[in-house]
Structures are given as C-alpha cells and as structure tokens.
Length: 329
Ligand SMILES: [Zn+2]
Ligand SMILES: [Zn+2]
Image 1 (cartoon, helix red, strand yellow):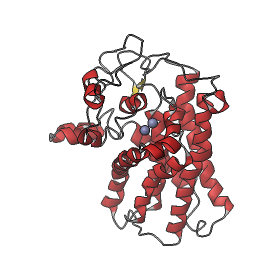
Image 2 (cartoon, rainbow, N blue to C red; image 1 turned 45 degrees about the vertical axis):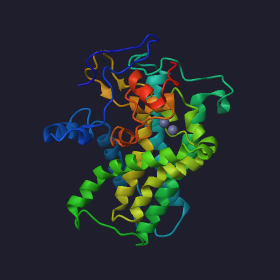
Image 3 (spheres, rainbow, N blue to C red; image 1 turned 90 degrees about the horizontal axis):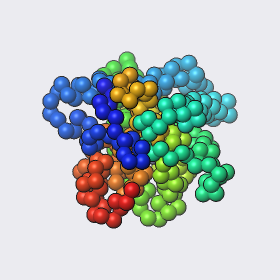
Image 4 (tube, rainbow, N blue to C red; image 1 turned 90 degrees about the vertical axis):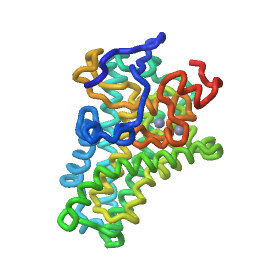
C-alpha cells in the first residue's frame, strides 16, 4: 500500500525508499507473489491498466463507427476516430496536468523534481514547455495514432486481416488484452534504443528529451517520425489474429500510458505516508530523462537488466553504468 516512508533529497525532490527492481513476474518463482503483483494495488491490472482498458471498451462500444460504415474511406468515420482520440488525450493528459501542475493540488509532495516546468524560455516552441508538449501531442501524436487506427479498422472491415471473436476463441480473445501491454513494453525497449542511435537521436528523439524535467504532456511530445515508430507497435496485428477492439485497446494503452509515466509525480496522494494514494508514475523512466543512457524500457519487462542498462536509482547503480562521468546531480 503506497510508500511506507516519505523520502526527499537535499533539494526536496522525492526519492524512493528502496532501489528499483523489475516486477515479480521475472524475479520470483513464487506463484503467490506473482498473483499479488497481477491483482494487487498497485499491480499490473490496477489501477491504470484496468482504467484505460475500460475506456477503450466503452469508447469502442458506444462512440465508434460500425465495421459496415468503415469499408470505404470517408471523412465522417475517420474524423469521428480522430476526435475520439483527441478528447481522450485532453481528458487524460489534461487531467493529470491540471491537477498536479496547474492547481498544484498536492504541492511538491511526491514530486521527482521540484523545479517548475519551464515558461518564458526560448528553448521551447511558443516559449513554453507545456505548450510545446501539447502541440506535438495533439498535432502529431493524435494524428499518427489515428492514422494507424483508421488503417487497421479499414483492413478489418475489408477482411484483409486474420480475425478472431470472443465466440470463436474466448480464452485467447481475453488473454490478448493483457498480453498486448507486455508486447508493447518489449517493442518499446528495442525501438527506443534505436532512437538513441546518434543520427536518429539528433534529428528525431532529441525532441522528447528536451524534457529533462517532465510533466504529463511530455509523455507523447515526440517528433512525427518517433510517433510513427512508437505507435508502430500495433503492426503486430498484421500477423497475429485479433479483433478491432484489440487494436483500439493497443493504441489507446500506447497513447495514454505516457501521461502518468511522465507526470513528474510518483503518486497522487494527500498524505505523506502514501496511504490512499493513486500510484502512477515511473521513477524508472524519470531516470531515463535525467541520465539519458539507461532505463530504455519499462520495469514490466527487464530488458535493461539483461543488457546492463538498468539504473535502480542508487549511486552505485549509476556508477556501474556510467563510471563516474555522469554523477553530478
Ligand atoms: Zn519519456
Ligand atoms: Zn530516450
């Protein structure tokens, strides 16, 4: 349940009590611990995965064109999908930002870096970090997300993909919803490492890394080429049998997860003992924004551990990865 002990460093930045470690799925063979991680709070399913999954299902059931309508391209159903995605982005990214950074509803409690997001600085488009991030998220991020979604829905409608239904394969159908995020973080590790290849970093990925101190809108603030790579995770549905709802969910998980992951706060909580908190962010990924050449993936799948780029937040871990060259705080 939350954080037992509230820790801050000399500057007032929140730091975890213990070194970070991969999730139990890969560190233990005890079934009870794995089940606790899957169904516990915070765990694999709760709170965020289940919230986003519910949003995907609800929007698909009630705010989505039918597959009969999407056989031929037209502006009506394609713009319906675009605005569905845009509204969801505004609610989720905007919600985190408004609560944590505009209203500062919990001050600096659980904040990774107590420096404010930058304003009035020519480094940013429109001289404002948040506005630049909103711009890339809504203009490029939402568009690329929507284009992939339109492409897949159109292909499903025209029977160009191998499909399954709940009736034909109930177990596989349900399981796929929970395997998709695991695939996504695996894909993310390798595609993210690719974007750290010098030419790609210099022209493309630098844009995301302008955010050393992150806010929710930093999450999807990427160069259009990076959006194409990032949302390209859904191309797996070209080869695995699935249902349109799986693709809708896949893209929504991919699109929304970065909001919490970059929020800049470890949890939403009005108490420093962490009780009743809504845990959400990723200190692991915050360290990637702080130190760049570590933690390319997510804790969900320990590729960083296997490839020697796992930074657990401790000084020793940093020295192991970087030697002594990057240890200035
Ligand atoms: Zn990031
Ligand atoms: Zn990066």
